[in-house]
Image 1: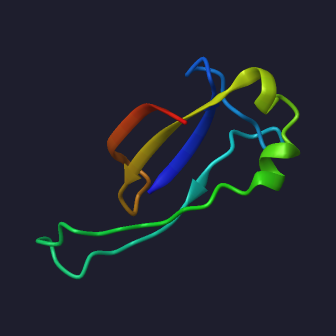
Image 2: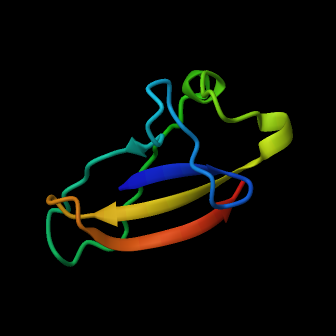
Length: 84
């Protein structure tokens, strides 16, 4: 599962200190294909956001896309434009 933050316009990527699109991810492998009630907690580090060269929280706002990927990094499902 990957979380990608965007500026409040839902289109402009928020960049990390290396000028790459910021992403927070966690890996989970379900014990069976019938697993339905899985909870995950991912933390977007504020210091990384604060160091971003192209994002100002007082001006830009923030939205997120949550992407579920398989082990080959193929997108299985994407939830877009989640407002904070």
